[in-house]
Image 1: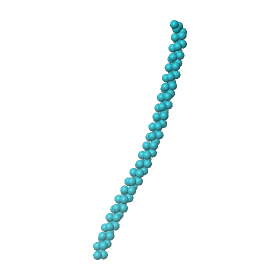
Image 2: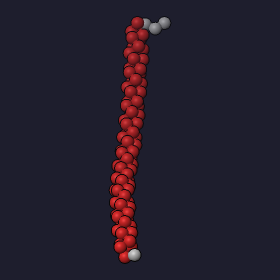
Image 3: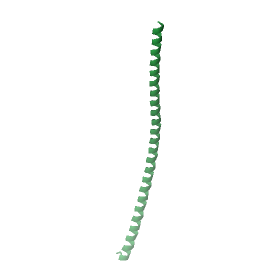
Length: 90
């Protein structure tokens, strides 16, 4: 049968092993959380970059639409002037 002193030594050893395992588990979890945070940050950066690129495209489309609108207006004005000139010369 084990003596009280042997039991205490065994208990201390078990506590040491458990503490070590808990510390290792905590470190593994922290490393995994850090890796996940890095991956998420990278994804967010890529998404933000794509959003910026899309915003430039949207702005270019708006400018193009405005330019086309002005050209159509100018064409209408020129057609009106041509019709007036044709009426005067006829």
